[in-house]
Structures are given as structure tokens and as C-alpha cells.
Length: 85
Image 1: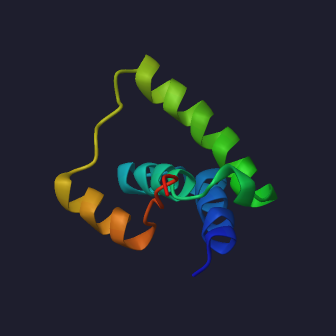
Image 2 (image 1 turned 60 degrees about the horizontal axis):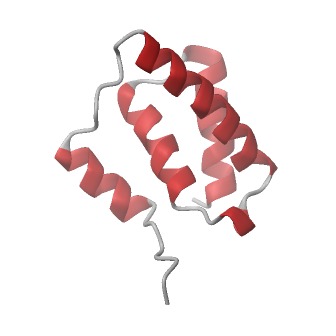
């Protein structure tokens, strides 16, 4: 699945039923794995929504970190490319 398709799917899930913790962290990893120059409309929309949700989670004390297993899975799914050459 490409990043735009997944961003649209995550937005749809959020708007219809809300995100669970793993979907929240997947959105974070998806955004982290996308260089600024490659940001598209769906990814920019996802960033705005994710930022709002992050603020709410922090304010409510519900910002549970991902498990180590989830981190490994998400890094394999959406690897962050180094910006250093």
C-alpha cells in the first residue's frame, strides 16, 4: 500500500470511529517516514489531524508510547529514510 492510500485510510478510520493507539502511532510513523518534499494533500491532512489528536492525548494524559514490538513493526512498514548523505 502506498503512503497516500494509507493516509486516506487512516483519515477515514479517524473520522468514522476514531483511532486506537496503534493507528495513532502508525500515522506518526507514516508522517515521520515522509520527507517534507514528498508531502501530498492526504499526508498534509493527516499531519493536521495527527497534531490535533496528539495535543488532546497529551492534555488528557493518554499519550501511551508504542510497545517495542509495535515500533519494530512500524519501522519495517514505514522506514524513516536518513536525510544525511
